[in-house]
Image (cartoon, rainbow, N blue to C red):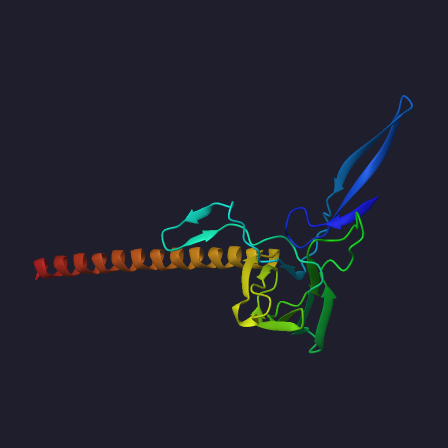
Length: 215
Protein backbone atom coordinates (compact mmCIF):
# COMPACT_ATOMS: atom_id res chain seq x y z
CA UNK A 1 0.00 0.00 0.00
CA UNK A 2 1.55 3.28 -1.10
CA UNK A 3 0.61 6.84 -2.01
CA UNK A 4 2.28 10.03 -3.19
CA UNK A 5 2.97 12.90 -0.80
CA UNK A 6 5.12 16.02 -0.79
CA UNK A 7 7.12 15.47 2.39
CA UNK A 8 9.45 18.47 2.11
CA UNK A 9 6.90 20.88 0.63
CA UNK A 10 9.13 21.56 -2.39
CA UNK A 11 6.81 20.47 -5.21
CA UNK A 12 8.52 17.08 -5.68
CA UNK A 13 6.24 14.14 -4.93
CA UNK A 14 7.66 11.53 -2.56
CA UNK A 15 6.15 8.16 -1.67
CA UNK A 16 4.69 6.96 1.63
CA UNK A 17 4.14 3.21 1.86
CA UNK A 18 3.29 0.52 4.40
CA UNK A 19 5.65 -2.44 4.62
CA UNK A 20 4.59 -5.81 5.97
CA UNK A 21 7.18 -7.69 8.03
CA UNK A 22 6.72 -11.25 9.26
CA UNK A 23 8.91 -12.16 12.24
CA UNK A 24 8.38 -15.17 14.51
CA UNK A 25 4.99 -15.90 12.94
CA UNK A 26 3.88 -12.36 13.76
CA UNK A 27 2.81 -9.78 11.25
CA UNK A 28 3.97 -6.24 11.76
CA UNK A 29 3.18 -3.24 9.58
CA UNK A 30 5.70 -0.43 9.37
CA UNK A 31 5.13 2.90 7.68
CA UNK A 32 8.07 4.15 5.64
CA UNK A 33 8.79 6.96 3.20
CA UNK A 34 10.79 7.22 0.00
CA UNK A 35 12.30 10.60 -0.86
CA UNK A 36 12.48 11.58 -4.51
CA UNK A 37 16.05 12.89 -4.92
CA UNK A 38 16.17 13.23 -8.70
CA UNK A 39 18.21 16.26 -9.72
CA UNK A 40 15.99 18.35 -11.96
CA UNK A 41 14.70 21.87 -11.74
CA UNK A 42 11.09 22.18 -12.82
CA UNK A 43 8.30 24.54 -11.85
CA UNK A 44 4.99 23.79 -10.19
CA UNK A 45 2.04 25.30 -8.37
CA UNK A 46 0.35 23.59 -5.46
CA UNK A 47 -3.19 24.55 -4.49
CA UNK A 48 -5.24 23.59 -1.46
CA UNK A 49 -8.80 24.80 -0.91
CA UNK A 50 -9.90 24.82 2.71
CA UNK A 51 -13.35 25.09 4.25
CA UNK A 52 -12.79 28.50 5.80
CA UNK A 53 -14.64 27.44 8.95
CA UNK A 54 -13.59 29.07 12.19
CA UNK A 55 -13.40 27.52 15.63
CA UNK A 56 -13.95 29.56 18.76
CA UNK A 57 -11.54 27.32 20.68
CA UNK A 58 -8.64 28.25 18.41
CA UNK A 59 -6.63 31.03 20.10
CA UNK A 60 -6.31 34.39 18.40
CA UNK A 61 -2.84 35.74 17.67
CA UNK A 62 -2.53 39.31 18.91
CA UNK A 63 -0.19 40.89 16.39
CA UNK A 64 1.20 44.39 16.23
CA UNK A 65 -0.91 45.43 13.25
CA UNK A 66 -3.84 43.02 13.38
CA UNK A 67 -5.39 40.07 15.21
CA UNK A 68 -6.07 36.80 13.41
CA UNK A 69 -6.59 33.08 13.91
CA UNK A 70 -3.99 30.60 12.71
CA UNK A 71 -6.36 28.08 11.05
CA UNK A 72 -8.96 28.30 8.28
CA UNK A 73 -10.47 24.81 8.48
CA UNK A 74 -9.52 21.58 6.72
CA UNK A 75 -9.15 20.70 3.04
CA UNK A 76 -12.44 20.74 1.18
CA UNK A 77 -13.58 17.85 -1.09
CA UNK A 78 -14.97 18.62 -4.52
CA UNK A 79 -13.78 22.09 -5.65
CA UNK A 80 -12.61 22.47 -9.25
CA UNK A 81 -9.17 23.99 -9.78
CA UNK A 82 -7.78 25.07 -13.14
CA UNK A 83 -4.93 27.16 -14.53
CA UNK A 84 -3.92 28.77 -17.84
CA UNK A 85 -0.42 29.76 -18.93
CA UNK A 86 1.99 29.91 -21.90
CA UNK A 87 4.84 27.44 -22.36
CA UNK A 88 8.37 28.24 -23.56
CA UNK A 89 7.39 27.03 -27.05
CA UNK A 90 4.61 29.62 -27.21
CA UNK A 91 1.83 27.06 -26.74
CA UNK A 92 -1.20 27.84 -24.60
CA UNK A 93 -1.38 25.34 -21.76
CA UNK A 94 -4.29 24.62 -19.45
CA UNK A 95 -5.00 22.11 -16.70
CA UNK A 96 -8.03 21.23 -14.58
CA UNK A 97 -8.50 18.86 -11.66
CA UNK A 98 -10.73 18.29 -8.64
CA UNK A 99 -9.53 18.31 -5.06
CA UNK A 100 -10.29 15.09 -3.15
CA UNK A 101 -12.59 13.58 -5.83
CA UNK A 102 -13.00 10.32 -3.88
CA UNK A 103 -14.99 9.96 -0.69
CA UNK A 104 -14.31 6.26 -0.04
CA UNK A 105 -12.87 5.10 3.26
CA UNK A 106 -9.06 5.23 3.36
CA UNK A 107 -8.78 6.63 -0.16
CA UNK A 108 -5.09 7.16 -1.02
CA UNK A 109 -5.08 10.58 -2.61
CA UNK A 110 -3.29 13.86 -2.08
CA UNK A 111 -4.98 16.38 0.24
CA UNK A 112 -4.13 19.12 -2.28
CA UNK A 113 -3.81 19.63 -6.04
CA UNK A 114 -0.40 19.98 -7.67
CA UNK A 115 0.26 21.05 -11.27
CA UNK A 116 3.58 20.51 -13.01
CA UNK A 117 4.65 23.44 -15.19
CA UNK A 118 7.72 21.74 -16.70
CA UNK A 119 10.56 24.24 -17.19
CA UNK A 120 8.27 27.18 -17.87
CA UNK A 121 9.47 30.09 -15.67
CA UNK A 122 6.61 32.37 -16.76
CA UNK A 123 3.89 33.57 -14.45
CA UNK A 124 0.68 31.54 -14.46
CA UNK A 125 -1.82 33.76 -16.25
CA UNK A 126 -4.95 32.72 -14.37
CA UNK A 127 -5.84 30.35 -11.55
CA UNK A 128 -9.56 29.61 -11.25
CA UNK A 129 -11.37 27.87 -8.41
CA UNK A 130 -15.00 26.78 -8.65
CA UNK A 131 -17.20 25.75 -5.74
CA UNK A 132 -20.99 25.17 -5.58
CA UNK A 133 -21.68 27.05 -8.80
CA UNK A 134 -19.46 30.01 -7.88
CA UNK A 135 -15.94 30.71 -9.10
CA UNK A 136 -13.14 33.22 -8.78
CA UNK A 137 -9.90 33.77 -10.69
CA UNK A 138 -6.51 35.07 -9.60
CA UNK A 139 -3.96 36.37 -12.10
CA UNK A 140 -0.16 36.41 -12.38
CA UNK A 141 0.63 33.55 -10.00
CA UNK A 142 4.33 33.03 -9.26
CA UNK A 143 5.70 29.57 -10.22
CA UNK A 144 7.00 27.26 -7.47
CA UNK A 145 4.35 28.60 -5.12
CA UNK A 146 1.94 27.00 -2.69
CA UNK A 147 -1.48 28.62 -2.59
CA UNK A 148 -4.03 28.28 0.19
CA UNK A 149 -7.51 29.39 -0.90
CA UNK A 150 -10.17 30.30 1.66
CA UNK A 151 -13.61 30.37 -0.04
CA UNK A 152 -15.53 31.97 2.79
CA UNK A 153 -18.36 32.74 2.57
CA UNK A 154 -19.05 30.14 -0.18
CA UNK A 155 -21.80 32.20 -1.85
CA UNK A 156 -19.74 35.41 -2.16
CA UNK A 157 -16.64 34.91 -4.36
CA UNK A 158 -15.62 38.55 -3.93
CA UNK A 159 -14.71 37.73 -0.31
CA UNK A 160 -12.61 34.67 -1.15
CA UNK A 161 -8.99 35.03 -0.13
CA UNK A 162 -5.71 33.49 -1.24
CA UNK A 163 -2.44 33.13 0.65
CA UNK A 164 0.73 32.58 -1.37
CA UNK A 165 3.85 30.76 -0.16
CA UNK A 166 6.79 30.78 -2.58
CA UNK A 167 9.42 28.03 -2.80
CA UNK A 168 12.58 29.35 -4.54
CA UNK A 169 13.90 27.08 -7.29
CA UNK A 170 17.54 26.17 -7.82
CA UNK A 171 17.74 28.50 -10.82
CA UNK A 172 16.72 31.47 -8.66
CA UNK A 173 19.23 30.54 -5.96
CA UNK A 174 22.01 30.18 -8.55
CA UNK A 175 21.04 33.51 -10.12
CA UNK A 176 21.18 35.21 -6.71
CA UNK A 177 24.60 33.66 -6.05
CA UNK A 178 25.99 34.77 -9.43
CA UNK A 179 24.52 38.26 -9.03
CA UNK A 180 26.04 38.57 -5.55
CA UNK A 181 29.44 37.45 -6.87
CA UNK A 182 29.28 40.00 -9.71
CA UNK A 183 28.37 42.79 -7.27
CA UNK A 184 31.29 41.83 -4.99
CA UNK A 185 33.70 41.84 -7.96
CA UNK A 186 32.43 45.24 -9.14
CA UNK A 187 32.77 46.69 -5.63
CA UNK A 188 36.32 45.32 -5.44
CA UNK A 189 37.25 46.87 -8.80
CA UNK A 190 35.75 50.24 -7.85
CA UNK A 191 37.56 50.20 -4.50
CA UNK A 192 40.89 49.35 -6.15
CA UNK A 193 40.52 52.05 -8.81
CA UNK A 194 39.55 54.60 -6.17
CA UNK A 195 42.60 53.67 -4.07
CA UNK A 196 44.88 53.80 -7.14
CA UNK A 197 43.53 57.20 -8.21
CA UNK A 198 44.03 58.56 -4.71
CA UNK A 199 47.65 57.35 -4.59
CA UNK A 200 48.36 58.76 -8.06
CA UNK A 201 46.89 62.11 -7.05
CA UNK A 202 48.99 62.15 -3.88
CA UNK A 203 52.09 61.32 -5.93
CA UNK A 204 51.37 64.17 -8.36
CA UNK A 205 50.89 66.59 -5.45
CA UNK A 206 54.25 65.55 -3.96
CA UNK A 207 55.98 66.06 -7.34
CA UNK A 208 54.42 69.52 -7.68
CA UNK A 209 55.53 70.48 -4.17
CA UNK A 210 59.09 69.34 -4.86
CA UNK A 211 59.15 71.25 -8.16
CA UNK A 212 57.80 74.40 -6.44
CA UNK A 213 60.47 74.19 -3.72
CA UNK A 214 63.26 73.88 -6.30
CA UNK A 215 62.00 76.92 -8.19
